[in-house]
Image 1: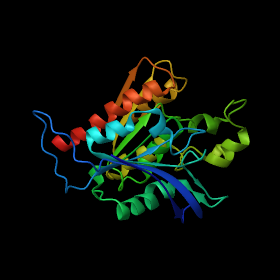
Image 2: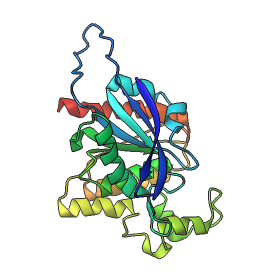
Image 3: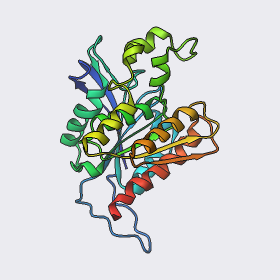
Image 4: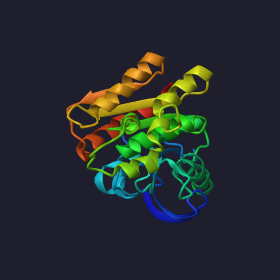
Length: 267
């Protein structure tokens, strides 16, 4: 297993940005019944996003993602998104959505031996990063074949209604990040609109895995998107089990999600 923390100049952000990469480069130990691994086959990849107030090192420090990447032979890339919700900030010329959906994909495919196939490319995240994974996975649907979203901060509807007294950030922050409240619904910051557009146009649709703990403060928002996706006929997997907004839940479910992602090899 090789772990890198690297920087590169991002044209999307107009500055240098940081990424953690986990590459299962070693020859795996063989066990009885284990299928041989083709060392010449390019890696499947997942671009894994952090939560609010987090950084590119969170997944590596707080979960078993290094071990799981090795087990599942998948390359993992964790970019730094600040508190952007991985949306494009046109005021600051900080295009985080473009970074995730275009530039980082192109850069990592030039540097690492990755599959260029859509089916082998996933985006995932937790909390704010779960929202970012859903939004950018749906927006860049021709890039990502799968989306993994854990305890997603699907707050665009509540921001559109106007958030008052939110302890995480000020109202001006949400307006800056998502846009004017009256213009959010129907925009590309609205996951429901993006999903409906893919259904209506018959475009390729990323497979979608969602999970949330039953004691998580974002449970209702996740249930709401699950109901919407079911209503419009968007196939997806949605799981709940006891759990709060914590690494214990995310560590459990990123393993389930990687098993789900790997299952498509057998289809």
